[in-house]
Length: 560
Length: 64
Image (cartoon, rainbow over all chains, first blue to last red; front, side, top):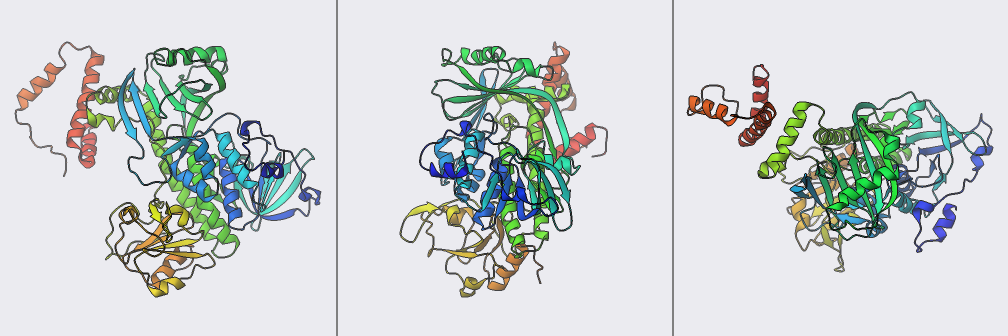
């Protein structure tokens, strides 16, 4: 199948796991090696991160070449938990709705010690958000919907079975050597973005490393299909009777499939543990004391894995940028891998587009690296803490872990210490140089400070239709103005990027008052939002010079 | 607020006796578990991160 065939199937359901794409030779392959074709952006790796980045760039009018060493979507379910912020990004990329329709929405997690519940949490306790806290959706479905979106965007040149085997970095370009079924060819790129996963070939070719801590423990993922009705919740057991001394995690996926993670310990034999005759008794033991003890169980996919928390020292090396697992790695507890990778793409796309159009200096790309390195550190911190709680590495660590779990049965305070994974929330980039600090005289309450990802809120349009704030934000900068905007705000300079002014009361209604509450709005307040939907400045009263300066700062342009 | 290291216990000898009594007849592993639960309960009662960090430093033999 080709992308054209896929585009022709719009409207008909597509079986993502069975999709196989045809290799098609590109005219670039006929060029002499000494005179390779030159492209502004080449993305390596068509996983969730590379696909999201390609779509974002194409939506901004930027042509991209996207290389993938395979010709299929993800094998096995792999990443399954997609967070609210990631869904909001997918909405912006035009493919959030089918994912939410297909996925299993959830927000409640329960933690058990032995067979007794000690703690539960609600990840989205308040009303007034378009998207759920999480959906569970197999990675091949996520990639499938992204590829369906790619098929609608002619600016994306997606080349299957194109494996990068050489990367040479120069001042003015990057030279890639690519292996194909027709033999090797070369491409020159102004910028290369490596989205090629934990074992990134681009990273290896450049002699770079991702460094950190590896954990000496093994986990089994078993995806099983069974007919069973149960609430869509995340269930985590410490030391259950059916799997003593280890942890177990249960999640529901679409298509009647359940994801079960069994901690196995470091001494487990990964090859043995992958065999169905070893896995099915573990699953039946889990089911034995539940309402589903007689359920028919079919093993769909299994994998035994270990993990590390690591990152590259810098996500930018000249004209090569790194995103997703290529740049950083976390444990699976907290669903911070794929989610943070998509958030990398969200951060990079508008910056790369602005630099390529010469609307912003090259230094804007440095801020991609700094902002996402900060976010990676936050994710690694949470992930490492959860891992230390789930798999204590010393006798005293185990002693305190067990003490917390024991106390959690009766003492409310101890439940806040139970850490079965702190689930993915986007980083607030409060230290970013792209932010304009609040003026000393401007007092604000709430979380929507410069650097925060813009919170959604229910709004109405002038014709009375109910909708949400985030889809109303512009592709460039957005000025959210409470009350009548000062006349000169209509003329602020976006430096080549569009500036959309949304006056609350005129362009947007706030019937429930949630928009005003979440952004701490008062008459006259102005909020400046970046193209990636992060707040970057706010004022109690703003005039054009102040907003112009904040936009210049957000584009890494010199500020007078 | 900082860690109180001057005498602060209402009844020092009574507290000390109660602490030792709480461990009576316990195997070492059970005593260790009790101590861990006790640390967590007291830490929550104190609550202030700065004071807790000072206590950790002092317990390791450093100057809080």
